[in-house]
Image (tube, rainbow, N blue to C red; front, side):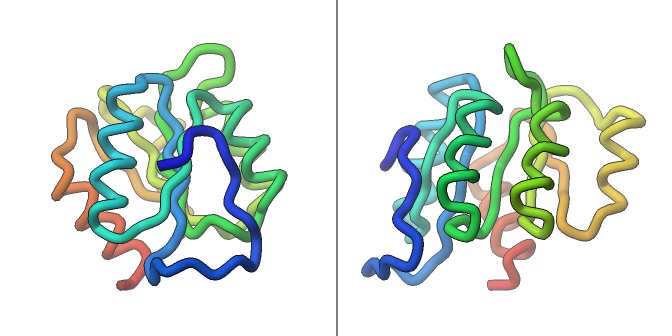
Length: 137
């Protein structure tokens, strides 16, 4: 499990499943999800906030297949991070996560084909099903 370390573009690993970036300011959520997804065969990187996520994406814009992005984070929220993420990776699939029901702003974002929403607390199997469905595995 890598905390705030971008994968090396083009470097093949023994893993066959895609790299997922998990962005959540709550360390317990981030590390639990990383560990679970790694057990399921995914490579993961973690970011504790929007700025760190943008830095990782800028350093390796083609390395990630999916981002799981928490909405409520200090300094740079998920909603503030999202448009900046789109500037770096316009087509990258994103799962927005929040304890709150989708706001009008989130609902308008969900019209985009490459974005989904999951409400916290979510079960690990629930988010895994969403990932598998979203990535077409």
